[in-house]
Image 1 (tube, one colour):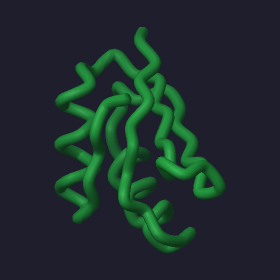
Image 2: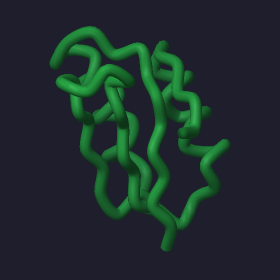
Image 3: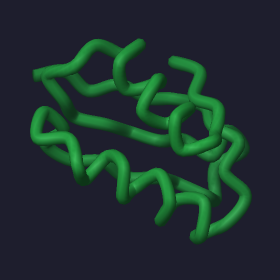
Length: 68
């Protein structure tokens, strides 16, 4: 299990909710949280997936995710 942090382009809770639906669908993601108060709008994900696989899920939902 790994924990990855991503810099995102989330703007509001609606963005987080949209990505969250995609993350919640994936059984290999144990937990995740988004910090909209940070300057990087940080998304933290605990998963057995690779960082690039997580980034693809976020990008599929229409947002950017750059590993920190």
